Image (cartoon, rainbow, N blue to C red; front, top):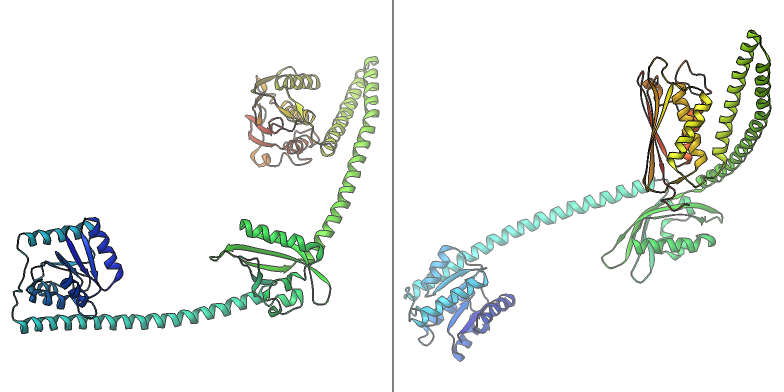
Length: 548
């Protein structure tokens, strides 16, 4: 097994070389400088020397000269392996001293092993250099000194450049420090101008809580200066209202565990003894040591809380008034329908008994007026019922429902010239509020029939339903008179009439829209004047949502 002596003043370099050479099957001895290497050479049989150049006590050049002058060891192959002496003149000098190889760091492990093996092979063949070509010692020393001076000059130049760079870095650091101080002053000025408190809060790994920064706004909200809040946060949290304390602490713990933004509204005691509502917002950030840091704000929430309280009171009063008004409208409308029904019945009887043409015409006019008033009251009842009642969950058979709608509309409008066509695709069970669904369909279909185009030979209204596990899409298409573009976005407004020929109350489509919203659905309208209108309704399947 070949024995390699490695010489380097850096432990990490020796460690790497030893690992590489031992892995290739060689025995390795290490020395930290040339003097120690000579001691090892006198005590051990060495097959090859691998040496750095720049080392304390005795450098690599001196070691090589000493080896080549010693008749006992001058045949041992000598390899320079350096990261400092890398010029061509350095290599020429080294080889001139009798070195076998001149290698510059770093090399790949396989390259190092290959170069050592080559030197060993030359040694085995008797080709290793023993006496340097420069056998004049004065010439050698002169070249050696020139090489050292050149390296010293380079080191001095590098040191001067490094000092210059260090001076620039120091100057840059001073400028950066000045800029940092300027920015800190600016941030403090900005924080002081914010109507509230800017703060930094820290929770360390052991659970200790502290405020590392609090802006001057604390004086306005709590009546205490920021220094009184710095440090242990317990002093600040002692001002939290007892009823809110547990809630605040739990929210901080939750924010820390999940690194979730912290938002909390609570009561805090002012220095003068009264409580203010305070709202806090902050963003947590994990620290390197394992703690959590929050940057955030507190501001006085008292006025907003008072406003919310007043608003809730007003809303409660308004809700009560609306409920009473709904009841009154429903009761009054319901009570009005009874006499209207009686009036229409009497008119029908009188029409049957009267032969006078003028009287019949007047009675028909009265009947239409009463019918119109009855329809208006029915719309009011539909709207009232839609606002009052909770959403029902009824199983819907779409084909049966559409067929019943068509039958009711044919009876109401008494116009057999309009074709009512239905197409249903129902994949699974579907549930929604059937009463409200009928209100929507009857209002939209009634409008489609009412505003059919009398000048067209073929008038029709089509209903296409496609329902699945999640939703139903209902399309109502007609080839009626259509709607002008500027009116399309307003047809769902209360009492709005899109045409001058409209005889309705302007409530039908408004009620349809409100009812669709109650069904948690939506509606879209596409219309072209003179060609017709398509209304697309989408409502969710309550059966799919397990609400039935």
